[in-house]
Structure formats: C-alpha cells, structure tokens
Image 1: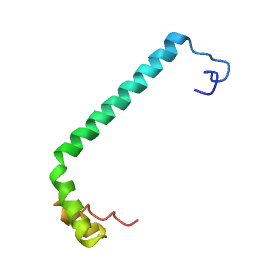
Image 2 (image 1 turned 90 degrees about the horizontal axis):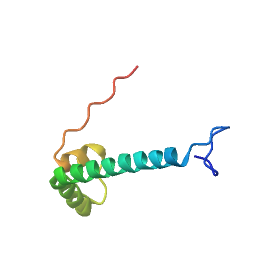
Image 3 (image 1 turned 30 degrees about the horizontal axis):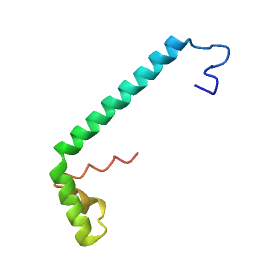
Length: 79
C-alpha cells in the first residue's frame, strides 16, 4: 500500500493490514521453502554445472544443460 496505507478513499483497518501482511509473509515463506527444496533436489546438477563453469569459465546453453545433466528445452516454434 502507498504511504499512509490507503488506496484512493479506502483505508484498510489495522486488522485487515495485519491479515495482508500475514498472507504476504506466508506466500514468501512457502516460496522460500520450495526454492530450498528444489535446490536440495537438484544439488548434484548444480555441482556439475559449477564444476564445468570453473573449468571452462563460460558455457553456451547446450553445454550448460549438458553439464547439469539435463535435456535442453525444445526450441520454440516459429510463427
């Protein structure tokens, strides 16, 4: 919300602002937990990618996916 906590003429109550804040915090905490889970699940791929980057400094997209042991995404269809 803008400074002062209002949008137009609407001024949310303290209880509503607390509910908004709690929901935002829940969304952020859920997203953070999911990112941590994904990083743990893909740790070996990340380590392989890091090793390849340390050895070669730069990788193109195909090499990066290969280093991580992942298939490269299909090229988008041209219109």
